[in-house]
Image (spheres, rainbow, N blue to C red):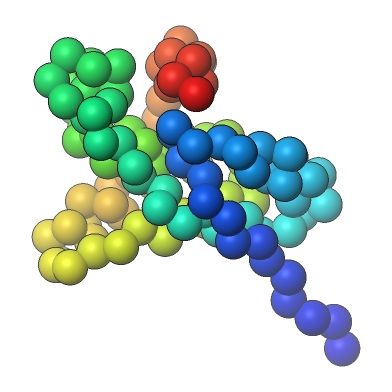
Length: 111
């Protein structure tokens, strides 16, 4: 009987110190659960890169941050905290958001 394996590390748009771990998890098919996955902070302010992309795609900055995480690797399983059903619904909509290569490149440049 095998054992389930996953990695849980701090990882988001602005903190990518665990990139090597994510790369390894991706190559090995190991689930990677980023904690503090949204972490947009100042990046979500009006005029910021995340806010600009959110406006372009008709989403919230949090949805863009989550969509970016889902885009970068098939093993990423973000679990953002939530305190309401409305917030949960908003977060779930990120899975339906498709970012263009240009938008992903702009978000990648934030690190």
